[in-house]
Length: 102
Length: 418
Image (cartoon, rainbow over all chains, first blue to last red; front, side, top):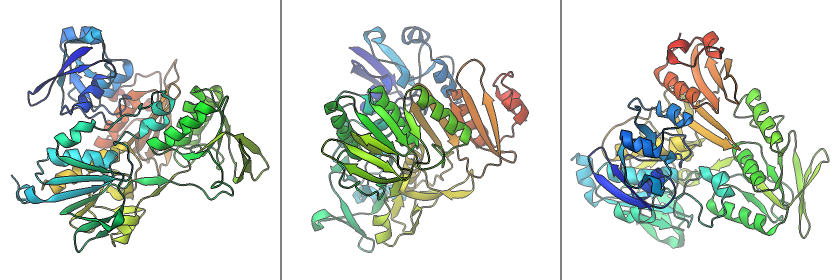
């Protein structure tokens, strides 16, 4: 069980609990604004862009090569960006805070 | 609040079709501030789900409910969207602004959105209706039936009719599950209508390496069934025994409802840049539409998630009184084995191809040009080419083709741009 907090662009803070699956799926299931997940979670659409803190990024891990490339679709991506369909929920990321990019 | 929204507080928007386009539209309309009712209707009884994973992860999943929902069940009620599943719409009365449902009940609308999609073609092959275990792959229920046959058949033999994306993804997934898989393609090469021969060769090779047999120039004349097994018979005399037959030979667009109401229909329901049909109160979105694409300056019908989502958004904006015109560049993807194919743009009408192979690994890209204009990019295991292809098509920047194909040069916009 991990608690993940999403902070939307309009500063809404939504904390959700999940056991498995991706952070994107958790966000979509709970209607978090700005996380669309159009491709269903296969790193093909870049509609689940989030920013992490430096500590958060250390815990969740860096983006993979394909993810980094896909993030380039978004001009606002930076070194703290991830596509959250590629962040798997586990105890290791309990308490993670994700700032929604859109 | 716009006059459209103010007026809308007692209005009803009815959406026919609750797949990617219809569901995204309903949520987008609410987000745009629509205060009236939203009624979302579909004949499928399942809660709306993502279709692309059906032939990929869902087919391979062993979990009963392994399909990916588009939205969580309770989110419809939360957004005030009335979801009516298992319901067929028979006709539209445009004058009375009413749709007629099965059993003669009716529902009035102020705005009607047709997101009716498409249905698989079942070719008229002798014996196909009588044969058991023949399935298309379009719905969660199709996949469920396919999985049931597999689970009760030891060492199943599968024949996939049609070497398009659906057929090939299905073949890859079924092979992973341990089936013997043969793909029968009518044309001289797989993916013949959609891509270049080099790309067809690559995928043919990929499937061969993974033990899927692909047979081209196979014209199927009959399916003969006995108690336990069917045989697929071709005009050249070849026979393929099959415990399971999956048909992936294309789709019919569901335009009957629109055509019956006298809306303009040809290769899809005609809509303008806002998704509006030739009736100010009726819109159409997704796979069922025939629309103009500004980047390619021609009318197209697209079968993809991108178009479903983008038309859903612009139709929602239009109904809420904001004029946003459709200006998207189409994109597609296909996952087979460990290969990721990403496509951006529309390659039809190309005059020149540029290949770029990355050094060392199995990634490459095909760039389609019409003169100097970049039309499309097929990227295999190379998201960077897909991403930059998207940007170059949108911005219409000119490329240096010689540098583009030189894989010794770094793949960077600054180097590739003319």
